[in-house]
Amino acid sequence: MDHWDEAMAFIAVQAEASLTNQSAIYRLRLACEEILSNVIRETGDEQASGRDITLWISSFALHTASPPSFAIRIEDNGPHYDPGLDKERHVNIGLPITERKPGGLGLFLVQKSVDLAEYHYSASRNIYCLAVKM
Image 1: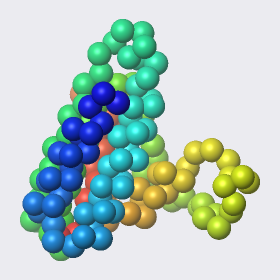
Image 2: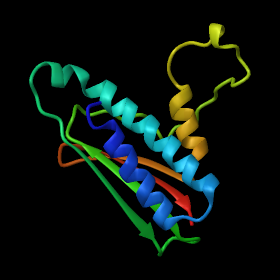
Image 3: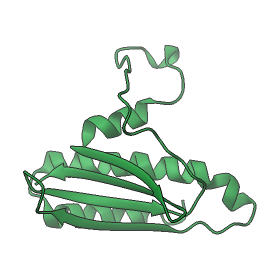
């Protein structure tokens, strides 16, 4: 959390430099915030035990995609955490907050906010890719 503002500023600058659609910028930033908050929550015990967790954030254009897309890639070397981005979520968004069970809504928003939300685990890293059409 010490570097939250820096991470979000990097994502904002990259998105605004590559995208002209304000809605796409907002949706991508929202999805990144949710993924980053999950990464921080999942790595908390590791950091408390003295293990350093490193976070890498990069951006790139997918010009080979049809239509072209802009992506943010978030990687960490924390414990394996598969958020199930490939699974369809059924969330009753009309349910009052007092009746809602914790969990699930944030990842539902990730899936609905971006055009591509992928996760894989490779080389002891969690890798999340979030993309919106350019």
